[in-house]
Amino acid sequence: MSVELRNSPTNKFSSVAGSLLMAAIFGFYTLKGLVNGADGGRVFFVALLALGFLAFAGYFARGAFDTSVKVTLDQRGFRDARRGDVLVPWDKVQSVRLSSPGKGSGVVSFELNGEPPDGLANALFGGNTVRMEINSLDMSGPDIVAEIERLAPHVVVGR
Image (cartoon, rainbow, N blue to C red; front, side, top):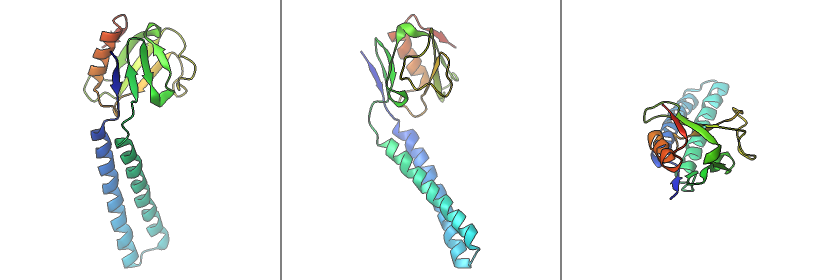
């Protein structure tokens, strides 16, 4: 039985709301600066900030409605579509660890007993550790680790 993880709409919607709020605040000050005859360069800068936050809101909203599978855990291994969509077999995984043991942990680290498979986007950190960002997913870190323990009992879980 495989486990499919997708984007968590709740996490994305809070980012959308925050970005829209910031865009509204900077938009208000842009209009206020135009009405009061403020320096054009400063008004332009504040308007750019408003547009930037509006663009962030659009980017986050796009992710909130993306229902495609991001991570798959099954009997063969794990696959992260965001990092190259390459299968990492469980027999290559030596241990797994959460960045922090609470519900808000943001990264699951997989220590491999060799080099990561070709095509896996591991350029940021390199080495034999693969890190999976999980804050944006619809399952908590402890639940993901529990699924890994069920699917690959030989993998050592770091606490």
